Length: 501
Ligand code: FRU
Image (cartoon, rainbow, N blue to C red; front, side, top):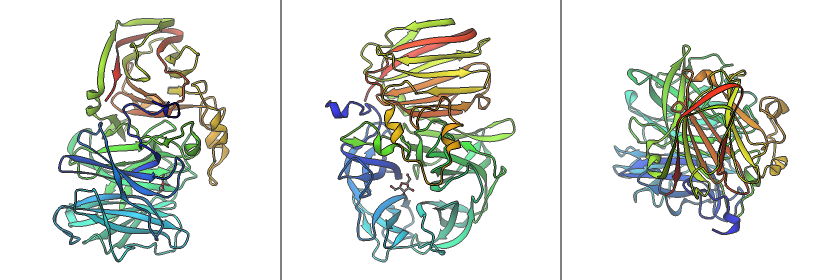
């Protein structure tokens, strides 16, 4: 590994060279998961957007293929989605892959275009009559079409982000689209701009007689800690219109970290609904301390619905396929932590790529947590703040953080979001993020924490809380320091797995 690639993750998907943002157009077909992504093949900053392409049979091992859709005279190829056209509605054959994406340029604006593939997603031919959809009101921000089959009406439905709302369209042939409705003005975190929608149906608490629709809305700005993040709305859909269960002010986050964005789901996976996020934040995505490539995707997560205090929430748990990454394992005896308890070597030569699993019972303590540390004293601090009822991850002293001063606040963003909501704000990178523990069940919290060179993903109680944050330690964290404040905590069932491909 060369010096410039010091932070390249071991088991997360990254481009070999060049820049990557949103995972998009993801689809499962004939045993392959296709991961297309916003890609600049010419450099490690955003620009020249293509659809990059990787494939996997297990969501973990990715093969890099040639970009599938290249920039053209209609502009950048922005985010979109791909469907399997099982019944040949578009006329390119049974099971052709049809991609709907946004072409973006100053000259033509943001318009929806179509391309088809008859070679299992390797190459796409652009539809000769593109675009297939223009905004009816000349809107500038009109992009990221997500298409799905709506069986009750036997029609395709497209959901497109349109500045501060999502618009629904219907089609029989994936080419002619008719406007149906819009949702979202005034809903969720403010200020915002809607991007990268998804729209999925899931059973509540596993009960298939109680299905709900979930609208994923990626917003930039609007993240409670500044910049970009993923929120969602739960409700009903009658084939035309979405009605949200909650009041406009209600905000539900799919992930409580600062580096979870543009999350959308893989099409055609049946009852399993799997999302993949991009692990960065538009505030500083272009200036992270990486050179040859830039951008990584978070681990795939399986989405489900659970009820807590009369509200329906989405749990985002890491997919079970990641267990195949587990190499060496080390188990630890249960401990009662009072004050401090240190584990000096997590697993020999983890090389910064491992999973921690444990149950924490904070008991009488006001704060119970641990620092993931290296010999230089750099630490990712993860703790339960029982007084505030929060899970916190504080990365102010996690390693390289100064680049966060160069972050680019969104024009629509207020300082409140960036400063008052986070824990210990120092700059847009050096801060702590938190999640409400009220989402969890009880007195013991089950944690799965995935560390991979420059990322930490925390899943609590099967994804009731997910928290994804980048960190740039100058050497791997290989020491764990548990501590409590004002009481005793139990740590049990603790394991560390070295992870590798
Ligand atoms: C979200 C986004 C999308 C757009 C793409 C451009 O991160 O801004 O709305 O399609 O990135 O690369």
